[in-house]
Length: 283
Image (cartoon, rainbow, N blue to C red; front, top):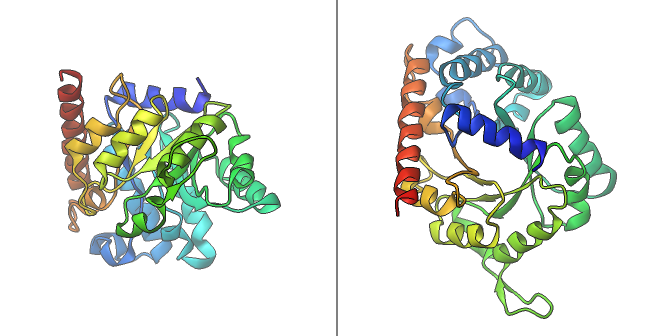
């Protein structure tokens, strides 16, 4: 078992949680009390810290999406770094970067996110093939979540197209990606991204990859069914599913009580996930 998977399981077990909170601070949705008297970068840091402090005992991971930080301009990476620094060391950090390039570009992307910023895992795009992923996979102690069947409505445009692997029957591209990642998982540090909005596809991916962590976005604002996602996404032990929710937790309230409201929302989600796990285990 890779150090990354060990850390994920430890964080999940110690908190009895499969919940991941997406740290995606949207300036248009920040509580006025956070913005008052602060420049936007400082307001985002204060907001993220408050949410992390309120929810850290309820989650196994946090997933900041780099787009929400890059949009800040010159101060983007300072805000990103301060956010990561606020996360307790025993909780998994997933940089939602969706990187996918070749050669030195991929190598430096991996170096930046794993070494410079110290993230535990990164989301990557497999469209360019193995050599685009290899620099990430080479960090055997870090996680690599590969886009497989994404949660957006247009996912089927490419991901459902039939492919013809040599010597095998036709199958949708997303299933071929899942099978490829099984083969490329030589360090045991691979995972997959599969949206909660497609529970039948999620179930099929779990069948193909029974032992890989699956990052599951799409619950909450995107409309994914929590119960169906958990039942389809967990492994045989009721683990290795990372259910990501962002807006439903971050903006549970835009008042002065935003942090307690975020905690209440996270606790309700964690408990609902665990109830679904229990029902899955009991048949």
